[in-house]
Length: 289
Ligand code: C2E
Ligand code: MG
Ligand code: MG
Image (cartoon, rainbow, N blue to C red; front, side, top):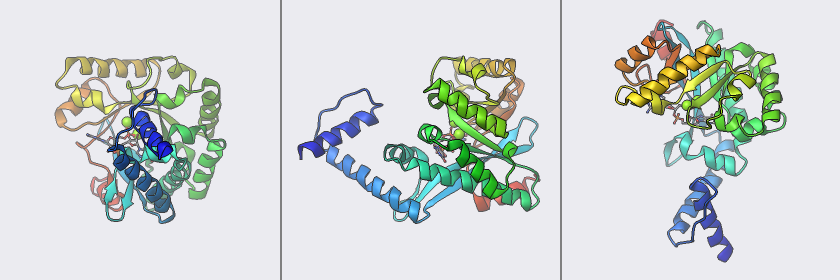
């Protein structure tokens, strides 16, 4: 019982962002139970093919559609559609993120190749990569085999990595990113501005794109400070020869402002929420793409 309770307190401390401590309290049993249920649920879900990908359009500043971002959801029987923020960190804790992430890569490549084969002009697909998956030995081979199995050309795949991921081990990161870059895969920094303040990695690593975090974009019409950050990020990206995507565009005012500031691409509810493959297919066809 002591070990179990200590474990519950440890989970709480980890949830608080690690580097913390928590005293055990009886309410924690409920949280631990939830965590355990989620663990077993995720393991079952992987075998039972309960994960699905939704797709959100990436729109060029001129209005054309460039591609889609693949976003995972868990279709948990009895619970419904579980968003990634609720289960990705658990999957990372228990090592299940590798098989889940591998599946995401293969499925996203397969789907986009199928759209290309069906006659839609070449779309790119952006896939989020967890830090653990990125550090997995053989990650480059996993990407290569997802491309080979689907027949998708490397230039149509974009991998999204957060600052947190690339700042961990510069040597290893450089090796992996260079190999992916040589393969022809596009590389993007996701959630830019929310991680580390070191900017040196932008020139050291072969990135193509910066995605400005939605927290800045969503606030920019209300808060001058956020607008300045967005403006500066766009300038920074362009000065470094990178293209820049704003995520979290919810209204026309924000989109017009971003266009004014020279932002290259956008993504957000204003264009479309993430959709399942069937709806995304209809959306892509009906938007005249
Ligand atoms: P992200 O990669 O930054 O993805 C953007 C998130 O912002 C998505 O949330 C998307 O639905 C949401 N979003 C897009 N436009 C708007 C908008 O206009 N307003 C608002 N309020 N939100 C908007 P989602 O799908 O819940 O995903 C959350 C995060 O989970 C992702 O953030 C990504 O970090 C992670 N994630 C999603 N799929 C995967 C995956 O396959 N593997 C891994 N490792 N992580 C994933
Ligand atoms: Mg992303
Ligand atoms: Mg993001």
